[in-house]
Each structure stands twice: as C-alpha cells, then as structure tokens.
Length: 335
Image (cartoon, rainbow, N blue to C red; front, top):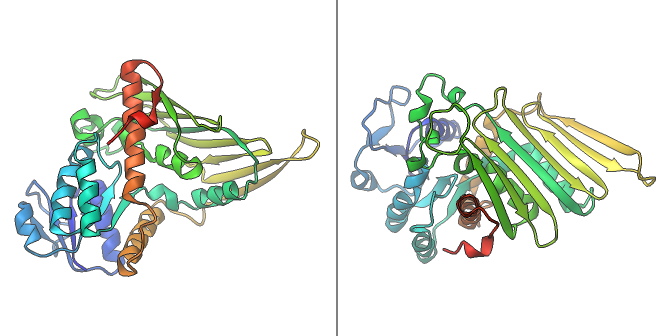
C-alpha cells in the first residue's frame, strides 16, 4: 500500500513516525507549505495535491487543520483513497453528506482517529459497563483541562490551530475525545446544554472553557468540562451507577472500581495502575495497527465515519446551545 500524508504538524509527524516503525515504507506527503523535512529526508513531499495523486496512493492520512478536513477528504475519496481522518471530522456540516455518499459509492474505508479508545483503561471500563458491574448508570462526569501555552512551548500558542476559530480550534472542537468516549460508553445523548466562557487571560479567539450537560432518554445525565487553562493539567472521569462507581485519573494512570456491598454502606475496591505498563504513544500505534488490519483484511473499521459524524453532531449542538442559550435536541442537528 502507498500512503499519502496530508498535513505534517505535530500529530501528522507522530503518525508518520509510527507508520514507519510498523514497517511501511511506501509513503509520500502533501503539504501546502514547502517547509524542510529534515527529520524525514526519504519522504517525497508535494505542495500540489494533483501531483501527489499522480503517485497513485491507496491510503490517505488526513492530519491538516480540522476546518480543512472535509474538502481534502472529498478530493482524496473521489480519487479512490481509503481515509484515516484525525478528529474531529470537521467544524461544520458542509460537505459531510456528500463525502458520505462518495465513500459509500466507491466502497472506501474511513477510520476516525479517536485514539483514546485504545487506552487500556478505556478498554477495561467498556468491559465493566458491558458486564453491568456497577448496575444502572445514573450519571457521569468527564473533566479535561490543560494549559494551551504549554502544548507547544517553542511556538506562539495564539497562532496555533488550537487557538484559532477559523482553523477549528477551541476546547469543544479540539478536546472532543471526551465526547467520543461518552458515546462509546453510553450511546448518543438526546439533548445538550452548553455554556462557553472566555474570561481567562489567553489571547485566543475561541472559547477558553466550556461546561456541557447531556441528557439521555434513559434519564442518565452526563457532564463534560473542557478548558485550555489548567496547569497542572487534569483529566478525570467518574461514572456512577446504582451498584458502584468507576473513577479514572489519566495523569496518574490509575483506574478504580468501587462496588457497593449488600448492606449499602460498605464497598469493595479494585485499583489498576497502568504507569509501568503503558505509554501515551501506545494508543497511536494501536490505532494505526487497527487501521492497517482494516485495510488488509477488508473489514469494517472499528471507528467509523459515522462515529466521526456523531462526534461532530455533539460539537455543533454544544456550540448551538451556547449561542441560543437553551437546551438543543441532537436530532435537530441534521446533515
């Protein structure tokens, strides 16, 4: 298979390094700026997409700014490339329906880059939920906050894509893994209410933080907090059921299961520490391996285009809720 990389920022370069480590060598790159590729001297780079396509790539890795995903994906799909698309799918619904049609017509594979699904804690949580270890789910809270200027300390943070609305930046768009995990664990919510805040000292034109509430038809409630402000960073999940609860601290790499005893007062506790057995890049390696298996075995992707669409629906519903200052029904976000 021949791969074409579209976008070679930090995430694109990570994917490139990982793909090379997996033994793939037939790789070219397309980027709009003719920047030096000192770290990858053997990679042929094109600044013209048509010239890149003349190399007849089979697969495209789309890792350019989020607002540019769909137009580029459309061109590549029409050519006949299978697609790996970094999250989020897009920042608006323009072109999504047409892309879906082209993908189906040409029978292409699309794999969304939600690498958090490959975290061992996520895999374990999914098993516990499917086994109903903590009973009926009552509510859950997800928190993901970190200080934007520290993402790339050697760059002017205000000029990075994450800080720029026009490129698809902002916590709601950029930190959308929590939305995907919520849907992966519990399915799609029915309603969304969001409040965005811009009251920190960050020099960006997106929201600085957001509080998003979700309501499910089952009565379950979910709360997600996202921000670009916290230092030290925080990423915690808490899932509460009528028979116990699950807690995970991402930065401590500790997962805890609490099971309430029959007396209703005491509980059993099981703790799993992943610090010695897991590194962050493991998730990126795992998702690329899965994507390669999808192509080689001609099977359905484990993370589909529809997963990307559902994630985008939540993003758009959150922004719409903030603008309208009211609850928004997910079903009203139609493509």
